[in-house]
Image (tube, rainbow, N blue to C red; front, side, top):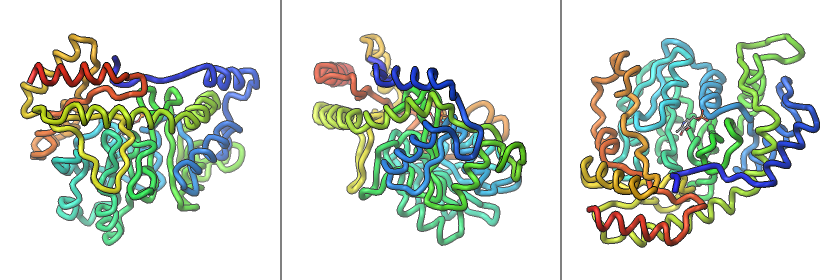
Length: 365
Ligand SMILES: Cc1ncc(COP(=O)(O)O)c(C=O)c1O
């Protein structure tokens, strides 16, 4: 019972074969090929946004967002440390400095109340992460960012389909970034997308994803090859159609698991009023690290893919420690890294599996 896995069928196979038959594997114009254009239009409709720009990974989406925002060496960008490494590494790739801030104990997401203390004259952007698929407190973060003239880039790489008061994850900042990596709630193999309502940013993003080229080989600005191939976009179109069904099953599983875990020694995930969770990851909190590790070992022994996201906060990973970030104290981040455990609720998980998971929790703790 893996924590997550791609769910692919005959429809994806037919879509991919259709691209192979067409021979049109990519299109280096800023607009992209037919499948890229169609995927972008469908994704923009799904999240109720003006523009969607498909790229070749979530990391590429983050890097491109920062480039389009004009982030450069000497700038500072505020990020959580309790996230996948890409959030911070995208900042490093622009030459700017990531400024790590702590998280809220209950949501595991960026704590808006610490933001004001992290902002300096060099702060140009903030990247809240919708960790595990639960949107960050973007209302408060956005208020602070806007009042200080700071660009808000939402790392919604894990949050496709989530929302706050009906507003879709990915649309809550100036730009939003998705990942379609195979473990995500929908996949294109590798892939990602940017979301924005800003026409000028969308135009820059489209050009920058293909070397800043406007016409032929004329580069009008610095860019790179961030293009999504046609095969991926064709798969994405099918997966996007299946997404509501996938998310329904995840929600049913998550709700059932919360019911089964009631009264046990673990704390199930909390979903604040008005938020919709996509249940990419169902993450419990254990009392301490030894309980967590014991529970994980027991689950894994029984073939349940319980996994820790993330055992090492980004600032404590060897590369960032080597840069001197290891001395920062982020109490809640470190506490979370020591006691969280994600349990499978993906669409393949059945009711009997959830009962087995809950019975291991009861036996073990
Ligand atoms: C929070 C977060 N940010 C960024 C990324 C990067 O996405 P990708 O792996 O598609 O480059 C991921 C993917 O795992 C992620 O979970």
